[in-house]
Length: 353
Image (tube, rainbow, N blue to C red; front, side, top):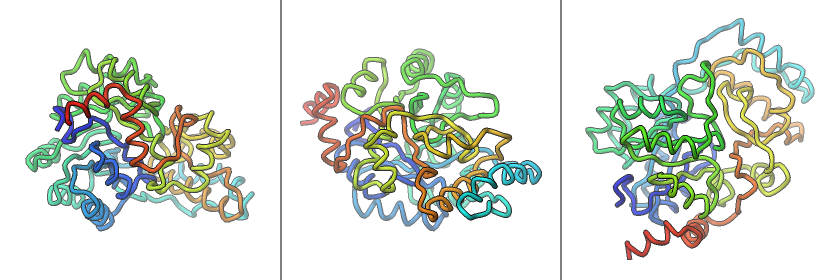
């Protein structure tokens, strides 16, 4: 075990809701690192099944990720304007926007049943994204011996994580794919790159720091180690693995010209997230987007309408700035490749042996 994570190798496969699977997490954990599953958008029954499925595939520790966003504000006027704003795009695919938006999943902060489930099942690690749960929940999880991690995009967020009694900070640089972990996106996003963010957190907090964002290979891992990170988290790098549930479009775009351009946008889900540039990001102007995840209902509906009409340019393909460095390898081969490429990981394996 490392001093930072309950695994031999301080590398985390990022949770990636909608893309990560128990099969992917299990392979990564069996290789000595920390595999992850994401239950932020899942029901309690689905979350239980995912955790139990992962446990059936590995006896090693793995991470369970939850979303700690604030309860969305239901603003019917703003949501009606947003549906009207999207209507011409839906019409292009002979479809209509949803008649009304819905809160398609709860925040972990509001979900007592999900909190109780994690205390019951006691996964080795639980990670928080978009903020932090109440102090009582943190305390309850820690009482079960669970290692707790939380995403920070600024030093202020890192300090809040430290003050809350969390064990590990995941420093999410602006290079990272998928949703930004910003606590209060309405106040802006500093868009700090992973290098300065890691350096700030290492110097000004006492917690172990995991670097995340744009890390795709052994050279990137070693660079983050040199910057003072105690470990690394890779997400986009694992999307091409056959064990992920990425769509064929997502996989194809990672292997083609789409992979060279990404953008951070709020128009798909209502929160800033980095995606491959496509029709969604090019054609939807940022109006007053409804709160996450209510806006996401419309984003998903538009993707479905376009796909039904045979148009894949509106697929939601989250990816980081290192997307062009992706390699479509089985997860076990990819893990072995990272160890071969990284002097740091290779040295850890020698110590273990």
